[in-house]
Image (tube, rainbow, N blue to C red; front, side, top):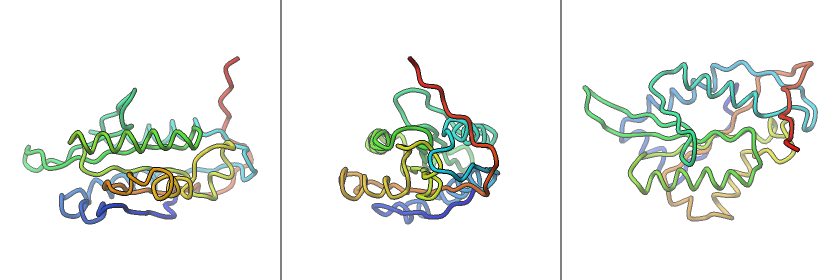
Amino acid sequence: MKITQIRYYDGAKEKICRLGLANLFLEIQDIFLSLDVAVKEEKDANGGKELRVMIDRKFEEAGDWEKISNGGIDWKKNFRCNQTFIARIGVEVQVSARSDLLVRDIVHLRNSIQAGEIDVGIVAVPSDRLSYFLPDRCPSFKDAVRYIEEEFKEAANFPLAVIAVEHDRAADVPFAKQKRRA
């Protein structure tokens, strides 16, 4: 995958550097950059679930990332130095659901920051270009920015970074779409 944009809020970039989270932030970027993703470049042609599974598998393979299954942030990792806990970073990945669920992800990050569970939150979403090829209500970078800057302005007061990810190339066959429950 490619990372096409990153937007920082409330000193997130400085906090990443000051707390020694730069290596973890680079690890997050490497997780996305190490994925080789090809999608059918037609409007709404691809499902997002398969992409999400690929991303989650990369977090698992990276090691020491804690997956939160229900009601919390997706991925969390601690930064330690000589067995001493220093800081934590949390990641929400939203590539396969409705864009309005992005607000829930931002709330998860906000709550985790307020509770002292993480120090910086990362929201990873499809780029505006990639979201065009995913299901019709899939979030995009511009959706995430709009939610933080216009619709849920409180979120801009927390150390968050939004990362836009994009596929590498076009494919002949789309990612399978999730079947709807009857």
